[in-house]
Length: 256
Image: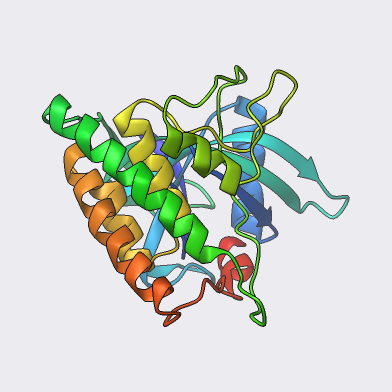
């Protein structure tokens, strides 16, 4: 199938919500098309080069995320503010540079293979425990400067009590109330695949590592890599060798 493409220096994972500011002409055209037709577009990582200019000269990753527009606000001058949600993955087979003002990809949707289910469940439980420790270490200590971890995810409206003590602690660390009138920003999912994408989109790692998580062939493979990455981050944060500092150029990179 064909999918309009929005190349970015960012990786979108299924279940994660991303804000975008659209101001370049080609991406205004892409946005108008998607808003008018109700169709999604694809977000794909730029491995090399830049997407700006008359003819993009870039190298794109082979796997991207399907982005569906959840909110769209248009300025009088034609710019847009979007809120998009990742809803799936695709393999990029080819790119059409001429049929539209923006890039159009020939893509194949990718199914989510779990792998061994028992292993996936075991790895999920281990990942949640490590994630709790990771969140604890991200908290700013006395005398330190830091930033709030801003997490935007797409979750079901129904709020359920956390199934395990680790899940409850993770929700508490993220400021989540699972009471009947709460509107949580994040629920810890029971499904290993959903959890694997959620954590892939939340933890602060280098873009090539996040892209590798997106590309993982099975949930078991993704959770295995997540466990190793969380162990690394826990070690570094525990020794205060690395603090969470958002990339100051991220907003610019997310803009067309």
